[in-house]
Image 1 (cartoon, rainbow over the protein chains, first blue to last red):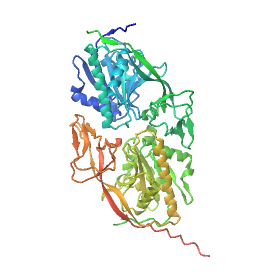
Image 2: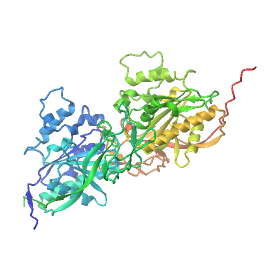
Image 3: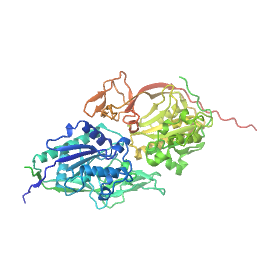
Image 4: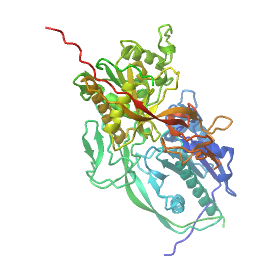
Length: 313
Length: 321
């Protein structure tokens, strides 16, 4: 069978969010810089809007004020009656939904890039929410190819219970960009440079697409979430072990059954309790201690996308 | 060199403090672990007391709640003439409590030694922080730790400016030192740093035990890094960052910085160069907690100096028959 071009609407409205978590400084300062001088992210025929999504958390240099902004873009929170009693981030989510959504509507922005950092050794990571999106699989393929030989991984958070209601999810095409390792509250030049390149290639892709370039079918390797793993804890709920040195910094590397995972404070090694090889991500992320997540297990799969071409031409 | 008096009695009252900054996790977890299981801190002549210095900041996983506890041990906060009020910042109240527990500062009743545990996001490796070269006992302790870890640099940083009042938690005791291990992000516990800090604490206690048992330590030559000045980030008119630490300076703590070398990279892509005339040794490069203090890195000078011998304790006269 010959492949056929799926005609798609050209992209018109794009937003770049920084500071969804106020202490992940790369996105905060890239967006602040682009608000001053946006030449770098402008593309002909495209509206690209830089935006600080959690200004109060940015000012305080903390992840959030009342609750995690990146978990409250569900229909229930977005539909709550406005009141001063709502957590700051829920009120802010409603404002953002008003500005860039409404979620699941025709008026919503086409693409939102949400810029994040992690303390984990994840390098350049793209986060995908929908395994069926030919457009995003094509975009991620383009970004990966453009960044090579610098590796760029794709984390698929599609899951019946583990998927969460992200800030970017109000767009038709939500893209999470996660670069690490970088401590919270620190801005590293090398990480800044990598994230800047990812955004450049992403916007270039959209521009090519809008100009009518046809993208042939492609395939990418993605890491799909399976399960979150908590730290071993004592009776009072305090952690009783840390990530084993053999697992620390080994994000995306195969973790085989029986391999060391935790080291308790009295020196005991706890092995992987799993029948098959998994690929750990978000290993020892600072913000996930309170979410009871020491790392997440993923499985490696391949996603295929059909060819795409904008309907403009 | 004017040396400070060295202890003439065994050190019996020793404290190990963690969580002075609540998001520096190596010390937080060790203090919490030793509060449950203190046996590791016992030596024949003494048992060190584990202390979780800032429990509220630890619970919130933040550096502090109201202000930096490790700058609060000054006479203006601790003295009796300062009336305590319920409105005092949490850390000022806590500093007074700790001064009661471990001090009072500069009194005969104060603890003999406090070892304070810290982490930094900077690539400082193992850094021993002492007040000044005049503290002969602590210099010998630093030397001992350097000899215990020959395969890894173990640098000595002298933080006290001449004439400056001491303000840290360890200044409450008659003698003290801080361990600063990095790089480790705030709120993260790394097994490698945890185990390194644990062995260093053990080596500190071993040194005190040796001293208590009457060991003499000969004079030696020492190298250390002393603060010269602080350098802030380039900033916009509004006070926001206008650039970041240059990739060629990032992670190069304790390495010589030559005049003309790049120190910052502006978001516009331009480089900023070091304009000083002397080679300096930057430390605490890109430490998360220092953004709010207006410090991108500290410039230090490298000192070489002689440390006089630490004489053995003379045994206490035994009661006659």
